[in-house]
Image (cartoon, rainbow, N blue to C red; front, side, top):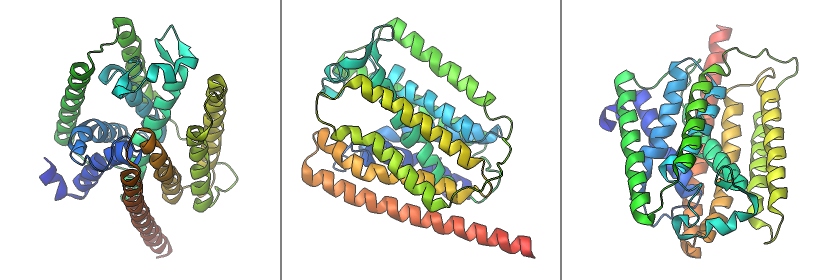
Length: 338
């Protein structure tokens, strides 16, 4: 399947997204060290397959970013809910997660509010939306079109399904933990509701505002600052009030969404803005992933080497995407003047 992808522009982009999603979601984050390169084969069907299915489903239906974002939220709950059950496993990955998140435990859901916030933040923004935005920057078609046909999309769905089933089995066999029927029920219902609801949002294009969108560089710095503010919680001293962090998360997300919506409706908003928005968040992972990797037990030398190599790759990717977007804009300007 992937050999055929490589001989077609759309398939090449699909393959790029398939590999980029786990590289960002696992390696750049620091969850998986660069000393485990073959783990990419295990993570790609879930991360890459999920991101690709979300992107293709939304674009094939003629939907824009609101649909992609809601589907990304559904993916976040699916991955850490029914698939690996981290939401409820108190000793997931060999760490005492139950104790770490005990301060905001919600008995009705069997999990922590703060953990839910982390799951939604990490997977919605970085595992799904950032990789999609970065790869789409190399596609100058407007409106964005599907990269795969129906057969290719069905094959990706098959790979995704097989991948998540395999990971689920590995988690159960490795930990012996299985969530309760009630926990699986509410999370599965939430995923299904979000998946269906995603195609009802953004059906109408919002009118442009009279004001102009800020320059792309401003958008990039804002994205880097807001996402860095989120990850700065890892640098706080122990004993910081957990419920205060939860409240701060709602404020941070609310402000970020409001600002992005306002900017996106401004005159001049386009591919360069979307690229820098994703790029700012991507670069946050360079420093946050280093800190997170150390917290995961990765030796300092490997955490530093991983951040340097992956960070250099992130910069190269952003530079290449920026050149592509600029070239497309210049070509479009020439056509309009002709």
